[in-house]
Image 1: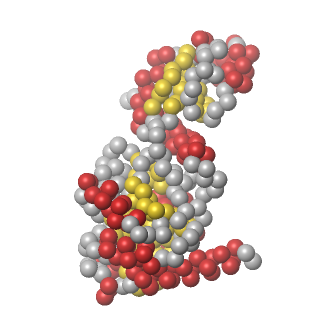
Image 2 (image 1 turned 90 degrees about the horizontal axis):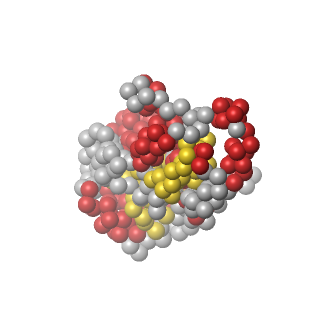
Length: 317
């Protein structure tokens, strides 16, 4: 997914470097920076995907209400209207300000990218496929056995070395009903496709169905951090999806499986006899008491097809 061209309009040019850094933290870049007093006639020709307007609106409305109205009326692309004041870098408020702005930018980017990709609606059913040692073979068997066009958006996170995301993506998509793609910042969840998470960069699933990929590495011992992937999915899509924990030799994904259950999602595990290493499914079983279903990769695929059919019937009632 290409980086968005973002423009900023400020009443104080000294704010631009801070905004530029904050926008970069969200994985985007500022292409145009305009001072409000000199922005007349330049907005329409800027060619940006979105504007961030950081102005003291109350003061401007009191002093120059008409130019502000003209500016807002001239903007035909999405915009984020900020409060004008940026907290000092060393103040406790700064991190909160930066996080709020990043969330707004990520939400906006997701909506823009969804429009670009002609994806009119969010996938209803989102399932995480979590694995470690033995996971790739098991997940490939599972995907090969899943019937086509189930309408599921799969997120695949497996502990791998940083250079193997591309190869893993190729293997998962080979001779499969489900296209596999390596997740980049701003990419969207897709029905009947498999989003392969990077082991190098922290990645979260956003409410609007987009992926937020940060430049920072994953926290913790494992890469990718399966708990983090499952948790961010559970918070936004848990009620209509779930997680399947495949073969692995650690306890990653176990803690977040509890959250998936609390959010109304399903937690399934690969059966002991079919695992290269059952430690990860076992840890998940212990964390939640008992999984909603356990089976071989082929049995898990058949169960998912049945689960989808049941969900569709309930929707049509």
